[in-house]
Image (cartoon, rainbow, N blue to C red; front, side, top):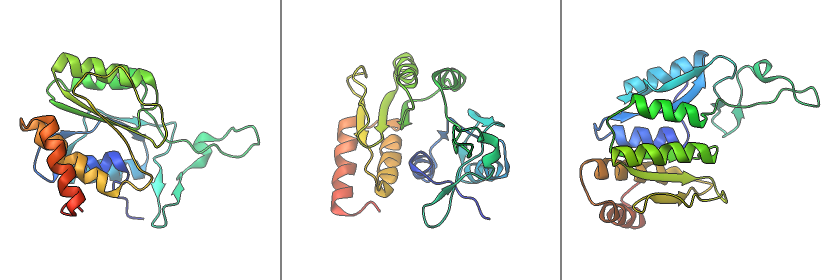
Length: 199
């Protein structure tokens, strides 16, 4: 089985790295063959992953061509009330994110995709404030939107089908990193997307 990065966070990182910008991915993946393949794919795309944690207790989710997500080793997460496996992907907690952002000391834009809890958002807000970095928070559909973000932050609710959003946010992060005014960059890219020039 060929493994390639998928999902909104990976899509944003790939879109940003396609412009030859420096991109670092903060994530947690399984310590398994699909996780190894993802790290190789990120490296081949020029995406740094020194702050990507490996989790031996959970498997890297694998999405099949028909959008079905499978857990390569459901026995790793066995133990639900009914006796059947619980399929859970590795997730980052606030401490993981805080440590990663202290380790990655040079950044001007932080994009957070589907933060798992408010603690993660607090860590990112603190890091963005410390580094004077621009913050983009992408929430799941109908999720609670954080209210205590810095004034220049962008908060978006990802649509159920977010294919074009990854490219737009990757390009936006690169533009802001290059020194463009965030509101001007976002307006220009949104207009391009509306006109159909961003696939």
